[in-house]
Length: 401
Image 1 (cartoon, one colour):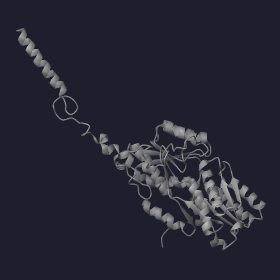
Image 2 (cartoon, rainbow, N blue to C red; image 1 turned 90 degrees about the vertical axis):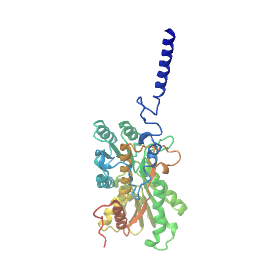
Image 3 (cartoon, rainbow, N blue to C red; image 1 turned 60 degrees about the vertical axis):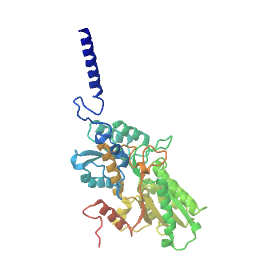
Image 4 (cartoon, helix red, strand yellow; image 1 turned 120 degrees about the vertical axis):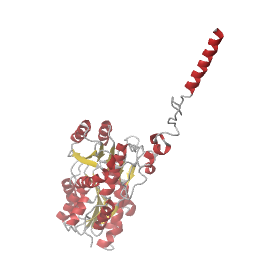
């Protein structure tokens, strides 16, 4: 009897071991197939894991891309557009984002600090704490980049920076996805255009008689880079000629630019011809007023970075010394930024995966360097209509004849 029991126990142990072994990954306890690593859900498949790296590859000329999620199949996302102070450029960027909102199924709200960084950050933090927003598109106040980066990071929300870079002060690595232009190159473009076109306005003058005025707000890194680019290109093209840096330190108001430019022009009657480059449109506004006040309209050629104020002047038949602007379409800025923040909310991209193929060595995230062009009174309408058509707007900014 004991032998029989021993044999039966041995058989039961063998069966139990077999049953346990049969329930390893690849089968269920009932013997039916279970998901394995090779037959997993899409989230675990090689193609899905590569999706964040590929999500921007279908971007069109505007920078608009899809992440594979139908916007109409999900809830409407609430996006905050934050800008540090009121400026026509920022207002127009907000308008462009609102035009794109239906296509992306987003609601857009905005906030500003009106030059008060503490208020700016408090507004952002309050909206995040209230869970009133799902993501942020932000223009940094370039005098407080590190503080703003910290607050945006602490919200835990996806954010994309527009216009400014967001660099580690120690390593200069880009810390967040940014959409903008290389400011040194933009500044160089200003001076190059003046060099290429001055004969159109002045004829074949003696180049040694040209001096440069370069407006700047050097505390703001992006504006300082533009001034550096403009001045370095001038030294390259007209070595030995005089440069008058007009540094407003942190001030970006037209009144300060007007006061400093008026004093400068009046103090140097010996200069026969002036080129003026501007790091920001509001400086150009002030300098343009100064040129008219001192009566130098025929002796100055001026260009700036940014098209919004310049275009409003051309729309009102302005024909003074301010001849051109270096511009990037607002549709390009906001298409890229809006699609990026939506892709992160959708879970189809990370800050590090966006535009990965275009990342500069040493950067943690990508600074998406957008193309720019020089606009004049003769060309701006065609350019604005071109980008409006690409965006699919129903009414063009300027009727075509």
